[in-house]
Picture (cartoon, rainbow, N blue to C red):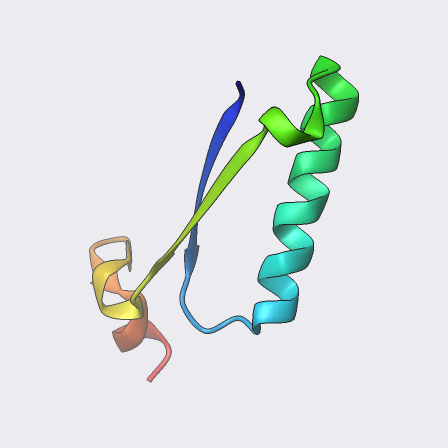
Length: 63
């Protein structure tokens, strides 16, 4: 059973997250010949205050 973990910054619309999960599932299905019903995708949204680039939080970089 393939398990895919994806971490993204918070703030994307649910429609985009749904499309991401669908497309990742389809890609894994096509690549590994795994049945779709056996593929698990976990998307974790990380707050901008908990994600840093070069030691500076994204919330600071985008303010």
